[in-house]
Length: 141
Length: 141
DNA sequence: GTAAGGTATGCAACAAGGTAACACATCGGA
DNA sequence: TCCGATGTGTTACCTTGTTGCATACCTTAC
Image (cartoon, rainbow over all chains, first blue to last red; front, top):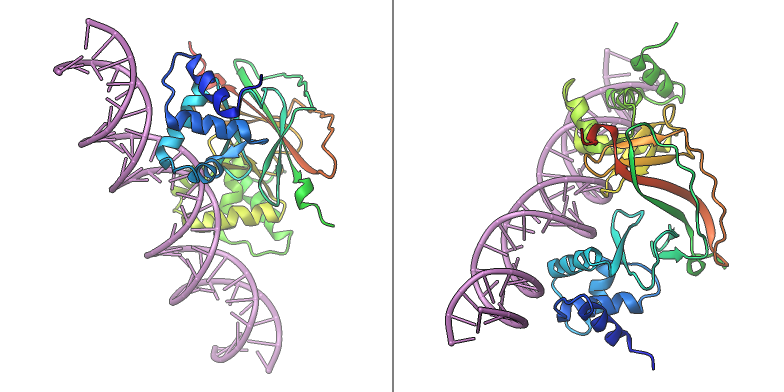
């Protein structure tokens, strides 16, 4: 049978032999449920219904999830970070952010390849490809 | 003969039939002199020697330069904008930002091509390719 | 030269995203 | 049950960027 997103979140944390706290599994569940990367503010708003999580705690939990490899941190064009569950968001693909509503989408269909020629003594770690434009929701007509 | 960066900055503004104010040409000169995109804070610090320019004025001048096509606005991995003179920084190339010192560099040698396949009703406007790693200055040894 | 209008600048205050410090709560093992 | 480690909440703070408003400055017309 399929696990609920709640159970998925709890077991993902438990499998790391880490404490399964409310703040952690609720945050991770929120990322599992979301179909696109969410900002801190969006997650906070989404969790508010079931009992608010402190702003600072949420920042810490998100960093913790990133550090444990359960979530990814992506930058948006509005100077705010987005977070997505690793199960949803396999690294290496591009992201698209709408210039109208600022929502971010994963473009998993595009698997970009880059040819790199860095200056001497520059050490490469990571690359981001991010696109801007208007999403389907914000299209006129 | 070659014009000084100061004269280059002044004439670039004058050619647009716009007011050549101190704040404008000094800011543009700072971008001409810089060999890499600068943050607002870096520009402010650089200009401080010759008489400080107000923080807000600098933000406005930078936006004005971008609006007039004299400068480009690039986003950094530290959630702060970088600015570069258009003469220095032709669009379409990738940027590299050091994870140690946060300095940003232009990779004009790399001319990336992207194959795009957007979801239906998504409208593409712009793409950014940004790399992370350590720069030559921050390399161990 | 002077008045009038638009444009630039400086100042103060503010907003949003994010972080640091500290105290308290909670868990888990000896 | 005690104790240390870990997690949480509160407050305060920093940084980046913006808004509103008053003042100073140019430019043009008279």
